[in-house]
Image (cartoon, rainbow, N blue to C red; front, side, top):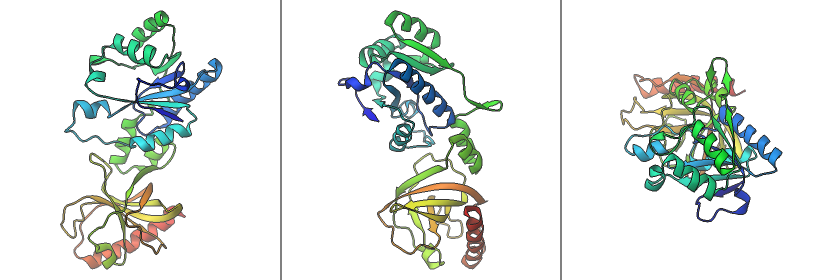
Length: 306
């Protein structure tokens, strides 16, 4: 999948295509349904298929001091989009110029002049442009005038509710990992470079690989059964997110104890797929009591990952 990051030099392979626009945070089943429509239409028209995203997220631009619970970093998002079979992704900077474009100017400068879009696929409630004054009716009228087609997609539902990034975030906040996985069509993933911790896990007999958690991450604090990908191999693991109340240092980070693993992962990149929530974070009377509970957590994790 080709990644386009500027409208100043768009390659021919990304012009004249079938395009959808969104944040695609999580690339959940609803996003996947829209992308399937894009690819089908592109095949009919013998045109390239693509998605347009903005970086940073518009909400982060307008409210830079409010942490945003992002489900997928941009690099992971692009990997997931590439896996759907799209030909290109246009990742455009959301800056003062982009934020100030009126809806008609967005259509002309970005869609028509920039990408020469041939067909657009959007949701029924899609809004765009300064003040979000552009809507589907405007796209339809401007498309007729400018020569591009429009498909308006109904939301993909599971029962009464539509798949959405908001629902995934809410499930993760509640520790409902099964629901989050069902919405995404895969396990939700944390990733990062292993950093040094306080070494308390090693002292308790459970050495952990620790990664920093992005600001705004709203995952429920507690213990998780997880798969950890490290150095190309998958390992069963117990994960912990919380403030370590037994030791009272108040800092939150994600720690993983890899079952049946003996090695050094410091400064190495790992990926953590959350499988199930085992229990919430809580205080213990002593490190010994915590160690006993950790033993029970490991047994439960083995059972869940079996």
